[in-house]
Image: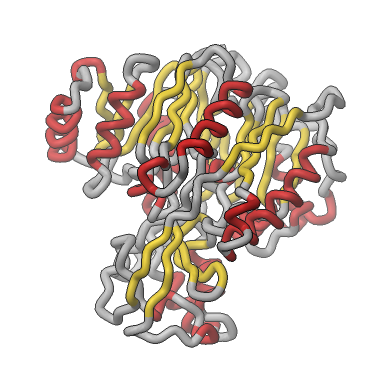
Length: 446
């Protein structure tokens, strides 16, 4: 999920994946039709991207200042069901993390700590797991774009290319190597893709089907059409069909941005783990806003339009065998919002500090004015780990008990036989993240 860029100039020297591989422009001429698989399979016929609901060998988590309590809670809830691996940046962070988890009652001696200087707290976005042709876990290596930072700079400085380029130069390319480091450190095969994406934007059923948010993939890969992007998606291990949805949740915009009127949010630009998830190979959960709330809140009204369109597409969609998908509507929580004041002295690394400089000039925002920040809260940002489903709980933030009960009933239909546990994820929601974003599912050998 998004985080504030460094406040220094970008590192000098080329990054190994900062640009698309040579020949990417030629994809336009060779793009297959919708749902059509490519005939070549460079990874082997049995290689495939794995689904979250499959058996897991381990669950990875990240550790970072400001999110310690969330890490401890996730670890405590998940450890009875799955071995844990914790990414820490250095020895000092490991000492602090061990003490934190121990205080929460986590069996620290059963946690594997992995030191990685470029570790992300939202570890989901660091890598995408797959199975190689022999059924062993492997990693798909997408390009790192800092959650579409360059695209946000172009949006923020529309019509001013020099300012946009200066803004984009602040990006930090270092996390681009994180997935490679994870693969090398764990002795896993790595599949490289020329596409830019984070793990939170990759949703698969483990049997060749991928659901893609068009707005998200296009923003991450400027210069490529949907057809060109689809060509590369169909080159991923095991992917044989792509279902395109136009947009995600309104409260998940690209970085800091206006949703409508004074309502703003800090988001990813439309990660699928915020609004559409596979519960099994044919069952899809889709975020569903309350009709009653749509009558009073403009952000919910936007979500009604967006999710209705997505529902119509998914209802007509089929798996690789031509069977219709089972689409379940999962209620969204009530909108969570807070008034924040724009300030020229804001430290925008923190979720509650905002500046007028974060918005396009055409919006005429001024420091001293106020905006209403909407949290990127979603019941879809849940975690599946073997026998448990860890759900975000919004009862303390305005979601009524009856609506919470509806969520439980839908999830019970989707995940029959699993336990349900709950976690407060609002702290992560303010920066576009959640429980799923803060975990990374390592599949068991197939």
